[in-house]
Length: 252
Image 1 (cartoon, helix red, strand yellow):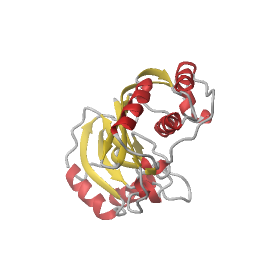
Image 2: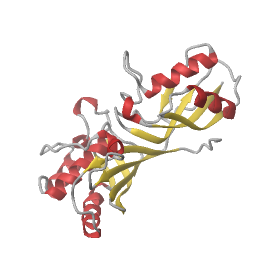
Image 3: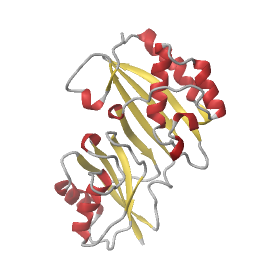
Image 4: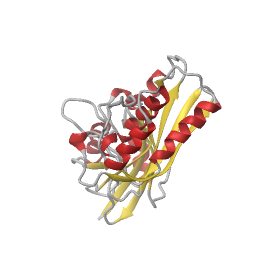
């Protein structure tokens, strides 16, 4: 048995997230619709990240076992790109021996969150508006706060309680802010992420800068896993799945 693995990007604006759901458009549903036509059979895909409604991806990894190997990877990518909606693209494809599960065989993920500091209708779908003076002092303050997320923590307080896995501990290797023009960009890399964890972390950091949440309270939540104080999650449109870490080389 061989497994196809795809790297895909998508604009999540018009989709109810990655995961297939009845009667609403999803990225997985659109991809499986096209695969069904190509292979003349139902094809079940697995995504490395189950991105939420409105969240975007530049490097989502998808795996599936096809009924046949009739399409070489590059040919499959070309055919899918002709069939898929304009807001979904296949960046690369490969065939691997045996089983590969995009979700369970990934070694980590990198996400980016974009924040614009002035109203801009051409970036509104891809960033969160936070009207604040963007300077190096602000970036330094944000990075000081971002450092509390580094290392191994119970992120239960930075997720949705009903969706918590049995093990809510994640290891974060990178947590940093950058200033790009008038835009603040947050990058986070970890071995795994809980549901809405990145959006919660960004929202908490903004609340800390705004004085509505204390750093000590955030530290307590990371230590105990309990949400000792409520805070607002950042909205979905600023979040991008940048890369899924695997050992695979995908042909473009």
